[in-house]
Image 1 (cartoon, rainbow, N blue to C red):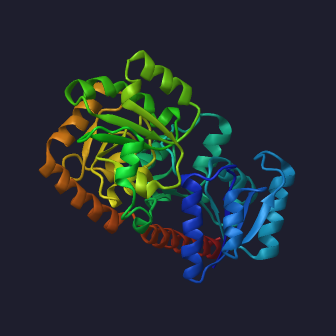
Image 2 (image 1 turned 90 degrees about the vertical axis):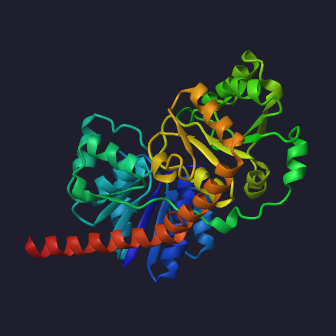
Image 3 (image 1 turned 90 degrees about the horizontal axis):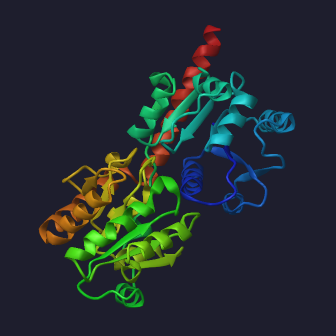
Length: 369
């Protein structure tokens, strides 16, 4: 088996980390691979370090005939058996270049509604494409968008639990962030973007500190909503209880400093930040958005609140902090859930199984044709 990955993102976020882990795992399983990525990307450099052939897309536009022709030539010259598209634009490229020519698998990681324009309808309803949904929430969006359920398989994203275990520097970070003991210190890790709704968490701060006056909320990340988040905290008179920590590489240490992890999303494909927090032993509060209920089962390994409801989110955070026995129970359950269902190894195994089924189906169709 020889696989061509296509990823058209400029940056390196959660999806690109999954591609890198997948490529490493497939290589260990003896699968030959190549990757088509944009020029001078972190993902491309990381894949080259893994001795995986990287083909840079000089024209990443999904509509450009030269891009489509170049991908077809690439597949033909290198003998790729299957194409795996990892982004929305990559899906369009793979559909235009390969549907009906080479088996195509598309991973969808977001729970945004599928657009109703003709191109979207055609590329999602093409029977030659098989989809990987990273959660039940994403699967529901695909089905609502017209995808045949028989062409969808769920393979959750995975993490490396060792990457976030035993983080050091708890006391130093809490001192740096001005935490008054006993706290709590509530933390968010993620992009400051609309679908993750960090404004929802900031809106919860006044209710939290009214009952827990030493509480602080630290927001670790960066993004387009940073200015709006600061303005909202000022409007609420909550700036002294909110820390904007920026993006940090020492995520294990940051998680170790937290008492409660909060994910306030209004839309979410799955949320690997929640997986990291559980693997690190941090009790989690989140919203019932998208694929989050696949990760957090209410009152089993965390607490869930309605999306876009700051009061409900604040109530869940306070309930978590006020019940030490529940926190201990959820920490143990969360680690177990991650170990059983959400490791990078299980993601690789699940994806490889999809490839094998796709190739068997492809060969069967060709024989019948």
